[in-house]
Length: 121
Image (cartoon, rainbow, N blue to C red; front, side, top):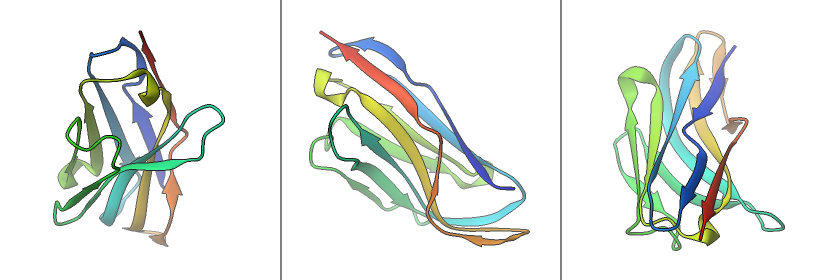
């Protein structure tokens, strides 16, 4: 059974940094794209960043220049380095994976359980 497990959330002061990690468990052969979404209180879920298997990354407008996404294909993992955090970055952050091929088939649109990031002033 394939699962995405996030870690690294927490409480940080504005201007600080956090690093989120997400690993896909199971007998995995390949993952096309991985990424991060977030949802703040009474806000719509939005794309933070995504990265393809070739390393090409896309960022949401609000995090461009402050956040960096990376992945380690050998560990089936994706990371999000968040710098210069702002109060408006407070949200639950979700890891995603798409077109993940494992021993039990190909999975689309996988989501992790989410990790809370809270930025205080």
